[in-house]
Amino acid sequence: MRLGVNIDHIATLREARQGMEPEPAFAALIAENNGADSIVAHLREDRRHIKENDLYILKAIVRSRLNLEMSISPEIVKIACKVKPDQATLVPERRQELTTEGGLDVADNFIGVKKAVDKLETAGIEVSLFIDPIKLQIKSAKRTGAKMVELHTGSYANAVNKKQENKYLVGLKSAVAFAKSIGLTVFAGHGLNYNNVSKIAKIGGIEELNIGHSIISRAVFVGLGKAVKEMKTLING
Ligand code: PXP
Image (cartoon, rainbow, N blue to C red):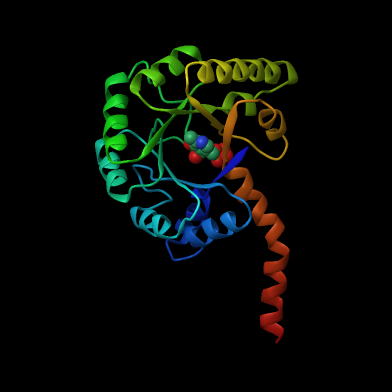
């Protein structure tokens, strides 16, 4: 199974000081050197982390695949067509949200989603739709002409007890099987971490998991000790 590493929160940290570090492109190189099969970045409409310029740098240096997460807004679609990432993942977007909440409602926004899919595919960009793991959305995704879907694992990840977790896991399994049966390539992601990923990784048919927050969070702790030691050495010669 492939792993897509979302590096948005390297940019979140940079934007805390609105400076130059940490540089998301360095994170992309480290992720790739350690096995990431794709690099994921979300250009949000409010540009709260990744900026347009980051995309051009990433496009130049990413050797695996660049997966641009984006809304279907015409402004963002235009930028994507200029940057030409390998893949675009269409997600819903609300300015106030902390992170992407819920999947794209393809059934209700069919015309707008299809328009974005057509434009991106015409520009040579593969398109994946980030949707909730339910039949109506999967069927609608297929009708747009997109070849790939990313199933939202947030409900599974946020389950408050084993019974609920199991219910969402069963739902995800049948959604994967259904999406595959109608010829879609299936990815999954959102809210996956070092404790909950194994059960998702065991579901046959998912080709890639996209994970961000938990990897960047863990990186802080596995790297903090070394960072402190290096500073101490600098200070004391
Ligand atoms: N997949 C999609 C479509 C997302 O929007 C996000 C969050 O940016 C992720 C995966 C990664 O989610 P997390 O940061 O919770 O691992």
